[in-house]
Image (cartoon, rainbow, N blue to C red; front, side):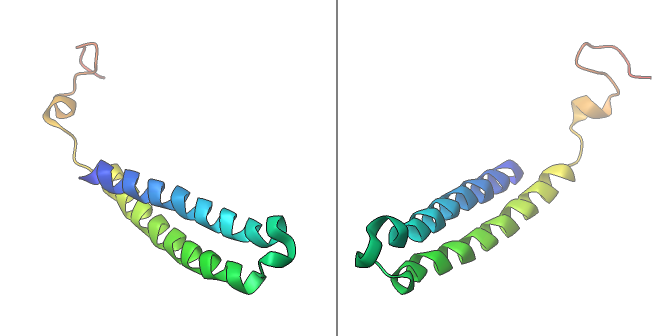
Length: 85
């Protein structure tokens, strides 16, 4: 669940960047057929979703970083089976 929260936050952030990028490029590419006020209908929600997804990714990162060690890690043995000093 912790890793899923982090992954969902990152994926949503990337998607919101795509929405903002496409919406911001619409008046530039289309010229007079699209205005900046029309583009703002995609830029503002994309930016809001981007901020929310960054918060979700931050919470997921905190959950992953503060996860308790598993039983294998608590035994003091490394991946090679030797006792850590």
